Length: 299
Image (cartoon, rainbow, N blue to C red):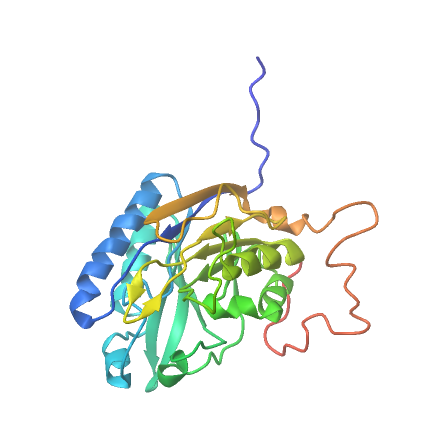
């Protein structure tokens, strides 16, 4: 029997973590322990890129600005980011987390990327949901794509995925995968369709399909101070369809997908006549939809 050769250019096991963190400074330590346990478990199962839920080390539903500040930390020298960087270095992998960042007296809902060499970069959430507007300042540094040795990693956070411009811009900036820490809260009913899938998961699938890009979303579960969370974490392939499955609404779990991370660079070629990115009518609208931040990386 002929041994099969793995012809993937950048084989990576992607993992998304789904669990229930708890708000309150008295829970900071237990949240950090829970996160570290899950990062370790994912690493033990061969993950090379792990995505955590939004605000996984702090919980989400703050009641006052004072409480929000009490959960905050600097980036990159805060307790959570230093933990992500330590584990990423120890296990030779990449971690996308999300923290309450304090900088210059302001708070941001910030996704961070750490790798084998430590902290890589951050993305401050652009679109703020509901009471987030009472604590956080909208992101002011634009969209970010980070070159790594496994591929180009783009970051968004939660509510951002409702805006089709975000995934399109990050893809056009060169992302091979978009990692999205989320805290999808209950929306106006129905919460789920007949298959048990929420609208946010459908939006993630649509964004992956429309941009031919991998998207890894890690959501949380449970209820916190009257807010319920949707679960439904997933890893979408470049064709949009979930790889493996969509996590259930209440599962404490880790999902995995073995992918060729740079496959997204050729995935837009669907047939002899259609290439998704080439077919864009940039004579009618500009390449980045009017975005004035970073320039796209070459594909």
